[in-house]
Image 1: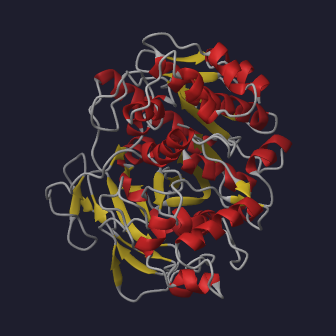
Image 2: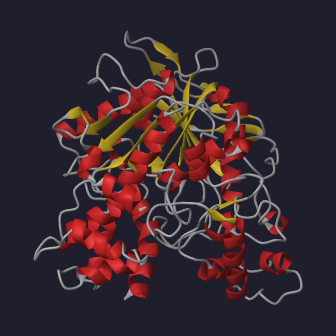
Length: 537
């Protein structure tokens, strides 16, 4: 049972972090505006020039698309394709191009198995980003910039899944979504590979350097950059706060459901591992890929087709520390105060663990009073831990799923988030939230075995149109979405989410976010049994 549950947990870590299919392309709409052929109409009815959709980047011209109130520029390279000898090499600058590059279509996702990306992807030429900018943003009046790192267990996901136009138009900011190397292609560690275990994090830094150098042409303020992410993307923000190589690349941080103090023995929340452990994993991977006995393992691996690499990799990935990019564990850096001291907006969801618990139960692992001790032992094998958890979280006849979800959510998300808050707040301003809409629109099809409440990733449709389409929200949920966008974008603008149009968010107190109330909540730690988890270790 232990192997079954742990394997499924690892699978669900990647799948549930970004668990929505990319929908089919929408039917053709009105013709896209171009720089030379269109005009806009002002409120007085006078014709005014349309916002430019051809922009000069550091590598060449790109032509994007204009929509109602915003412009998009997709598939913009920020680094050279990591192919051939550049597979498992630090990112290199993009190759300049002549003429005007089309930037009206989404980029190919980085290699990954089928899931969020239908059919998966084997295209290594993927180090691209997408820019969404207000229609009237210009170098003369630059807007704050939010750089978004997607989740997906560092194994799946795509920047193009996050349509940011609501955040851009309501919050008057520029949003950049990033594709970075995933899976073994992003995090393989081997003693013959400089940069081992951190190639995906190095890609994120290359994208941030591109933003500093080039976002001004899109109307973004290169000196006002907030790095944000959810799940593995949120943990990536933690890693960048701890990375000396990221110094000077961003000015604020938003961490959603990616607490910085995760631990590698827990199968749900992201974390980092020592380089020595990552190299052991890398050696096993090389053997599965058919290169374990090769004279030059990296050379051999660079010849292996991407599909075979994907089949050989582990489901979840972990960055490696004891490396030049991550000299230490980000959790230790946060604990010791050795991280970049920047304002942070931090939080998670009320029922983070329910999606995993539901998936494990639906896979044929019922949680009943009789099975509960074995289920807990599968995830907490240290002596005495399972018994203590069973006593603290008793299962009765009908509540096995929610109790299991509470254990996962409290142990791996809510309480590490509270601890991260305490550690960060000793050095920097922190605003903490808990998303608590128990009727949030589902991200996956089908009927779960119990109501999921506000599970992992359920806050995302309030900030983005996932996969390019809005979720069905009630009027109250739309108001909550507007409030959240206001908080997030004001934080990006001023390092303080408060403003006259929103309920006051006191620094040092978690703010509960639901359609019924947006209020400070001083009982978060008690509700999630954080004193118990602090004692358990």
